[in-house]
Amino acid sequence: MSSVNAQIKRGSAELAVLTLLARQPLHGYELAKQIEVQTEGVLRFDMASLYPMLHRFERKAWVKAEWQTLANGRRRRSYRLTPLGRKQLGPLREQWRTFFQAFQNVTGFQNA
Amino acid sequence: MPDWKSVVREHLRILSACSPEFTETIVEELGSHLEDSYEEYLRASMTEEEAFQRALDEINHSRKKWLALRLFKEDIMTAFARKIGLPGLLTFALAMILAWALDMAHIQPKTILLSNGAFLSLPVVWMCPLPVCGALGAIVSLRNGGSRLHRRIAAAFPAIIFGTVLLLISIAGYAISIFVPNYDWNWKFVVCGLGLWGFGYSLLPAIALLLGSALVDHTKTKHRTAA
Image (cartoon, rainbow over all chains, first blue to last red; front, side):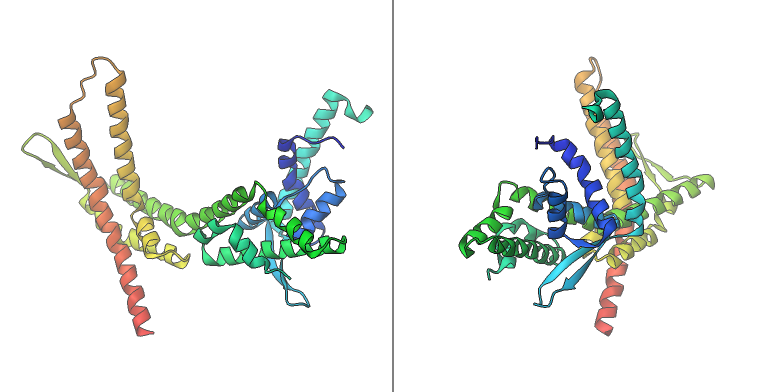
């Protein structure tokens, strides 16, 4: 798979994270894994990208973090989308849809 | 099993400058992430040493400083907004509303003519309720976990803004005097004028505002002693 420009990756990161969290609450490691698996490795989050973003979302009250204690006593910080975060997701999806539509119109990629 | 929290603390030392609760959250969260990675590498039939090294690489690569700095920024920005920014803006807004109300009521600052021809403008009536504004800013900062320094900055915010504006005006004036030909920059006049304005609209209001902050500190100490 060809590499994707870093700026496009960054721009799409928010949408990817919010979309996954809209389905179910996840902790950071799960999020990173699911994005990597579902995009077949095209999008790959390292810690330097993922955690500052999650904390920024938390500050904006788009996500709410809760500690979960596992059977072995270990704790994980699980993130779930808040109603405010869900509100952000709609317009964000729409923006990307418009962007890709416009891009396809220019490049004709869907027929390539 | 490696102590992943210690690994994170060791590799992200800059986080020690963050608030303790934020640091603890990050250390435990990233430690848990590394432990998950480590366990996955073990499941992929790596030796413990290899798995440890691979997990370590995730935090130890070239972007570790970037990670720490971004997390640091997230915390500082939050703390700044909560403890200084919002209470400071509240104090500033209250002070401005007061100034506007006095202007509407045609209550002008007291003007004192000095012997050298300069004049000192003293907004005496405006300064009287400023301790209340300062106290309100300090209370909001206190409620948001602000330290004594945070509370003082939040309380004195309007005076800091005025002082900064005066400073910028003097810098801009000086720059103009350099770049505009035949611009007569009268240092004596400018320094005297800015000094007088700084005294009347920055220094004295700062004292009044800090008085409010000091009252909050005093009340807080009293409550603590009583408890």
